Image (tube, rainbow, N blue to C red; front, top):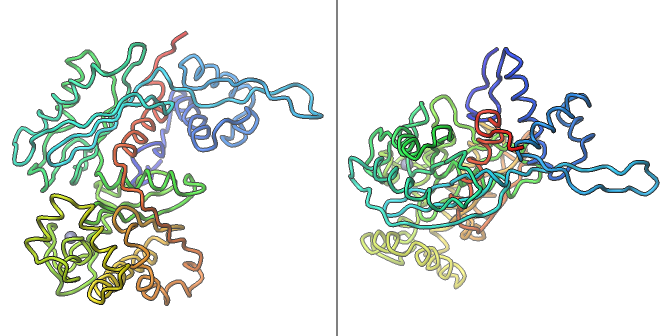
Length: 419
Ligand SMILES: [Zn+2]
């Protein structure tokens, strides 16, 4: 059977043996409980297409692994026997969500069940460091001491500002000066040195994980929704999230909507192109076009205080400064052009504007709406939702979600029966 393209986790058909069938049934139950919260066995079995006796056996296995817990009985009025709902447990199993930035690393430890264990931000020097992968691996190795007694590490997900190789283990990042850095291998080696050989290690682009988090939090029914995400602190990043999973494409590079061409003769972007969406709507560019800073000052401010940089634009727009309003109107147009192309190529249920685009959305939306007018007139696109969140992209939270998923999608390999 052919494998579905572009989804790394949980959507891979596992043909063949009964062990694989068992694994996919266990995962179906865990996904159902993740997406629906505490549920009756009856509803869960029906939602997963499982028979009652199979369900009893599988839930028994998941309970022995502390991945599922049976809640107190609920007695419904007029009904006979009280029923005991089941819910995700996962408390003994620990995951780490990691966000690598140019000069620091954020680490967020949590349980597979979703309880926060610790958060820490560590300074790190990566720029043009040829051995950056080892620097990161050593730093994560030292974090293993933070895992509380009685918890066992099962998965690590690392968010990087760049592209992940088709093997999912190497990183190329202009921001970090890395070209095919062997992050996966180095982190696995550091874990093995600590005696942890069965830990899942995943690496994703930071914006993929921000998009994953935004889609899971904002959409009513993420597991059957297609969403396009645009966000970022000062430059645009993007992702496609299909049925609650990052859509990665053939080589891991899908969802790179931030670098769609929107202006033939636009400024140059770090990606090497002229006139891509990011090059014309990044904060640095907007500050200059709004007459708020010259080019050097804008570059400096974005680097040192991106929040203040966004704040200057918001203030100017609220005060109706003509140059600021004009710059934001143009930016809304450019964003609208990109969104219009995304609607046509992907036909998502929702487009999510987060990060600084969420903060600026009130001033971008009129021009964006104008740009979409012809498109949303057509039936297939008429119900597309444009969702705005001004929450800053919580990349580590997205990494924790992906690490928890790794355990839910491979419970037999990553957990053991505890009783
Ligand atoms: Zn670009």
